[in-house]
Image 1 (tube, rainbow, N blue to C red):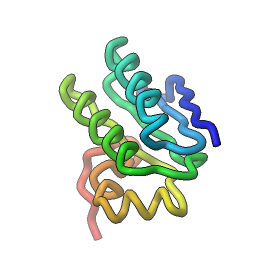
Image 2 (image 1 turned 90 degrees about the vertical axis):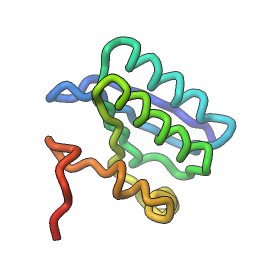
Image 3 (image 1 turned 180 degrees about the vertical axis):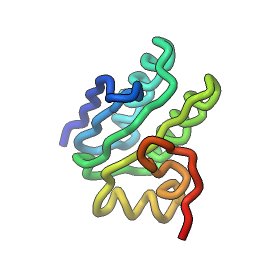
Image 4 (image 1 turned 135 degrees about the horizontal axis):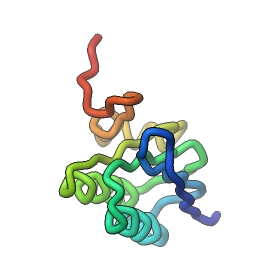
Length: 113
């Protein structure tokens, strides 16, 4: 299966990246390059849509952490949304489902309840 990263501006200013296919050792560099390009262009808020992502290994997890660190270095954030199946499970097991969860207009607000 192939891997694609597409992105555009969201209402409210955040860049929305859409991932499709399998994120692994062979494809993570493509995501890293897209994140680096967006941050270099001044984008601080990155929302990553995982709805069409079918697989994510530890290299993909590292790319999400790296992206969040890269955005945080310039006062921003990276958040994920739309994960299902095995991808959602990997995010839950690693703890990133909570750390990188997108909470609407205020991604850093605490979860209550």
